[in-house]
Image (cartoon, rainbow, N blue to C red; front, side, top):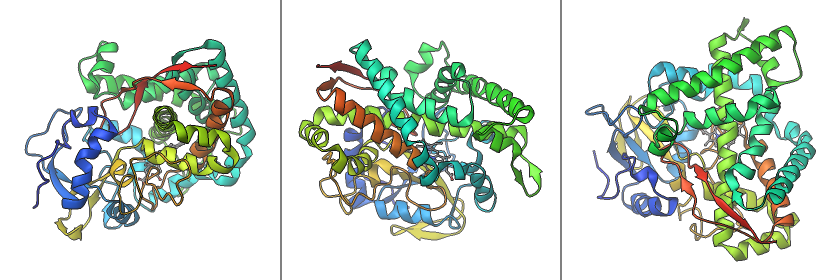
Length: 417
Ligand code: HEM
């Protein structure tokens, strides 16, 4: 097996505490010299497992697309997280994300119809009105933490309204969803008075599934026009979903629906502070440029950093022999900076077209179900922000240490009005 050239260690948490620009210094040479390379098991919530085998790092756009689009060769049912976690915790949180067809197709279908372009188009006015209120409230508030004032609010309200979760519970549950993916970050653990990452994840799971199952109970008794009602009424192969399956659905949608869009908004504010000309260009003609700008926001932010697959048979990838059972990890941030696909990838270009980024995944059956919802939220929030506060500036983002999500914990914003 070929090991990677001597670069920063992709398996270490130190690597994942750095910025995208710093990590790119490792990914760029890997893409040209060792596009598929072997690494030891990642450091994570279970410590740094000794002798437990490692993983293949897939860093090129073309290889990420190949793995994503060949689920028979690279399956999801043996886990999709880069780092290992206890099986019961994974089972309670991943639902169809960690399944293959036919079960994956059946479960995705239950909620998938609520996320089609047509259904999301019907929510456009609601999303635009919400975005306007949130931005206007930030203006009233003045300078502060952009993550709390703006980024987290719209995704949280949209996904939980769609689920049918009462407004007064939304903020606590969005925080629990964040915590579930933040356990590797020592500062977050200290803030919650917890040493053990697994304990923090357990607390977050409990905080999410309790209210999720309570909502399920209410919808069984009083059906409404929302996603939780769809879940409790759904039948797969003539069987209703179990509470455990409904709980896992709820956790998956909570994490996927909140954190990704929130972080894309935050990373975009950083990009538009650095690339002032691009901000002016977008603000001057949002009707013409917002469509391409939103794709660039997702490429730039790459809010989901990694997903894993497992090889189902001996095969070859990027010139390497992959054995059945080997773990294969896709690094979307790297695919999104591949010079074979993107000219000048370190430039934030609101007019980039074409922009076949892999922010929503590399294609195939697991392609992000919420992509239209995310795109619409990004469009509306930035349309409003640039219209009413074209002259803002953000400071240094506080980055989460995570090998899964590219999260911004806080981001000071100054509004120049
Ligand atoms: C900018 C925002 C978002 C980004 C970057 C993003 C990214 C991703 C990625 C990379 C995947 C895995 C794709 C794959 O394995 O091929 C995924 C899957 C998924 N996303 Fe998103 N996502 C975003 C927003 C959302 C939203 C708002 C929802 C709303 C519920 C959502 C729901 C899901 C679900 C349910 C899956 C699992 C799909 C499956 O396994 O079939 N995502 N997303």
